[in-house]
Amino acid sequence: MRSFLLLLGMGGLAHGGADAYLDWEMRDYAIEQPLGGLKGDAARGRAIARDRSRGNCLACHRMPIPEEEFHGTLGPSLHGIGSRLTEGQIRLRIVDQKQLNPMTIMPGFYRNPRYFNRVADEYEGRTILTPQEVEDLVAYLVTLKGGKE
Amino acid sequence: MKALSCLLLLCSFPLLAETGFQPVSGSEYLSPQMREMQEDDFANPGMETVDYGRELFHRVDEEGHRCAECHGEEGRGLNLARIASYPIYDPEQERPITLQDQVNICREERMDNFPLVYDCKELVGLETYLKYLARGQVIAVQTDGPMKPFYEEGKRLYHQRFGQMEMACFLCHDQHRGAWLRGQRLNQGQSNGFPVYRLSTSRITSLHRRFSECLASFRAEPFLPGSDEYINLEVYVNARGNGLKIETPAIRD
Image 1 (tube, rainbow over the protein chains, first blue to last red):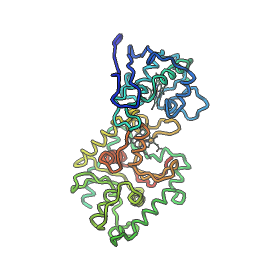
Image 2 (cartoon, chains in turn purple, red; image 1 turned 90 degrees about the horizontal axis):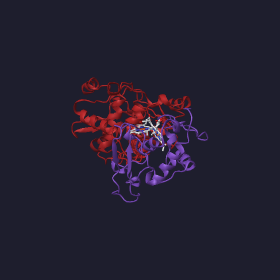
Image 3 (cartoon, rainbow over the protein chains, first blue to last red; image 1 turned 90 degrees about the vertical axis):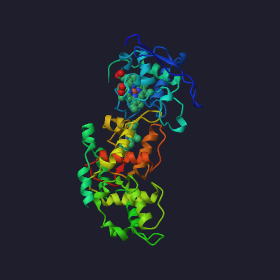
Image 4 (cartoon, rainbow over the protein chains, first blue to last red; image 1 turned 120 degrees about the vertical axis):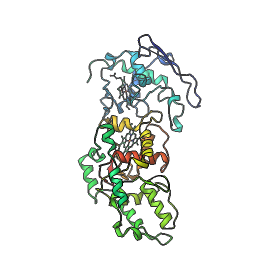
């Protein structure tokens, strides 16, 4: 599988309301290039991870965000994730975890909406997060160094 | 009666066979205080709906009929084991009918009255009362014979991904059961306590409404109460709980 190149994302969308879907490239189970060449901000990323209407990562993961109670246990702890995975590997896992595990429960936060089935009207043709929000999360997660909690 | 015993013989225990785990009621996941509240008829807020259903059951309708006319005062003539085996295959309609469908069939055929809208206040009230009478009865939904295609379709829906978050019922209620989704413990999504009273919304919640709430939570377009999709899902979800006891009205967050 090494050096195997997969091109995903089909560009523009049939449904209005959302921005055109940006292509990305997976290589060795990582996305090396930031989406749209955008630069992330770690502080914003932390806020998005907490926000129930955006990342809501705490629904499933434990993270070093002590001011929030009740971190979920569906997924692995993200304490120290920046020491275990590279930036590109983290980006792929946020964008589309199903590339790694088709059976996963983790939503693809920047997955191509054309795959979605029976989406509620208001979300039709939209990704869960914008490219900027994904980059903010990546910028935050790479700062989580050290061991698992 | 003969038909019923055949039905009981035919019904299987699909959850154990398919997933290797025993059905566990959602009540097992409650805090001790909430369980106490559920089991105490004076504290259980769902009893208000039971009382409303009881009143409808005994009330004379516009055409001069009452349910109790055929089924006895306090439903003493009802076959309670049968109530625990809905949805039941109806040879006339060639599809499974739910308890709410059956109430409507009685209204039309025996009470000369209009059917009520699926999941309306009255039908949910009557359903809650009837299931309350059948509390403790063991769930026994038929999954083979003419029920098989509907059961299989419900199972397919249970495993299909929906919505922007591409979730499927089995992911939360089979694969990750017992895990914490933020502050909520994922239970098996069993239906034996329905209709349930939800403390977070202060309202009685039918099974089809609960399906819609789960679908909306992962940004999928819900189906309609009483739709073929929800009835097939009800067949599968109820049958997953074969062997559990009816606990209506259960209390949930």
